[in-house]
Image (tube, rainbow over all chains, first blue to last red; front, side, top):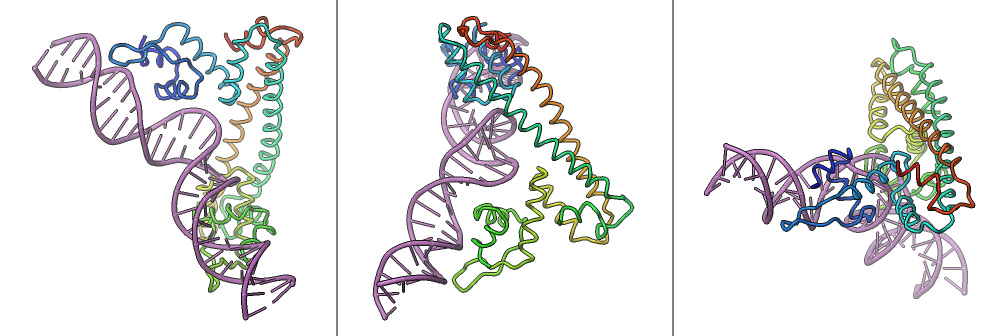
Amino acid sequence: MKIGELSKTSGCSIQTIRFYEKEGLLSDPERTEGNFRLYDVTALKQLEFVKHCRSLDISLIDIKRLIDLKNKPEESCSSVNALIAQQLALVNKRMKELKALKNELQQMASTCNSDNTIEGCGIIKSLDS
Amino acid sequence: MKIGELSKTSGCSIQTIRFYEKEGLLSDPERTEGNFRLYDVTALKQLEFVKHCRSLDISLIDIKRLIDLKNKPEESCSSVNALIAQQLALVNKRMKELKALKNELQQMASTCNSDNTIEGCGIIKSLDS
DNA sequence: TGTAAAACCTATAGTAACTATAGAGTCAAG
DNA sequence: CTTGACTCTATAGTTACTATAGGTTTTACA
C-alpha cells in the first residue's frame, strides 16, 4: 500500500509517518519506480507499535530504544522493565504536580464573584501575591 | 537594579527575563548610558506575576490577556474567571489522561518478570498488540 | 592608570514532536 | 492528453524556553 492508505488504516497523518521514518522509528520502505513509498503489513505493525508507545507518552528516543531491544530477543528484558518503570515514575510526578495545580486553581476560582470588577477581583489578587 | 540582580531575586534566568520582555509580558525597562537594563520594584512585581501564572501552567498568551485585563480595573472580572475556569478544565483533562496512562503502564509493568528474555517479555507483547 | 574579569548586550540556533506549506513530480480516469 | 488526486522533498512554524557566539560595558584590583 502507499502512504495514503497506511495513513488511513493506522490513523497517523502522512507527515507523521514520514517524520517517524526520518527519525529512524520506521524502516525505510520500498519505493515504486516513481519514488512513492510502498508499505506492507510489517510496516503497519511497526507503526502501530510506535503509536501505542506514543499513546503512553513514551518519548521517541525511548521508543527507539525499545525497538532496538525488540531486535535482541535473547537478551534480558530487565531494560524494558526499567524503561517502563521510569515512564511510570514520570507519570506519577506529573500527576502530583497537576494535583497541586488543580488545588490552587480551584481555590482561586472560588475567590471570584463574577459581578465584580477586575479591581476587586480575588483571582487577580492571588496571582499578584 | 540590573538584570543579574533581578534574575537572582526573582529566580528567573536572565535569558527568560529578556525573553518575556520580547514577548511583551514585561514592559521595556529603562536603560543605562551603556545600554544595560535597569529595573525597579514594579518590574520585579510584574515578573513575579508572570512567574506565578506560569507555575499554574497558564500559557504566555493567556498571561498577556490577564495583564491586559489587569490594566482595565473597572471592567467586569468575568473574563478573568473564565480564563481560570478554562485552565482548570485543561488540568482536569490532563489528569484524566494521565490516570489512564498510569493504569496501562502499571498493568504492563506487572506482566514483566525480570529474569525473562525479551523474546517472552510481557511488556513488549502488550506494546505489540 | 591599565587591564583583566565579570556582567551585560544582540542575534541566532537548538529543544520535542509534530503540523503546515511551497513547489514540483507521478499516476489513474475520462 | 489533460485534469485532479496523490505523492515527493525541503523548509518553516509551533511553545517556552535554553544555549551559544561574538561583541560591549563596567568594576575591581595592582
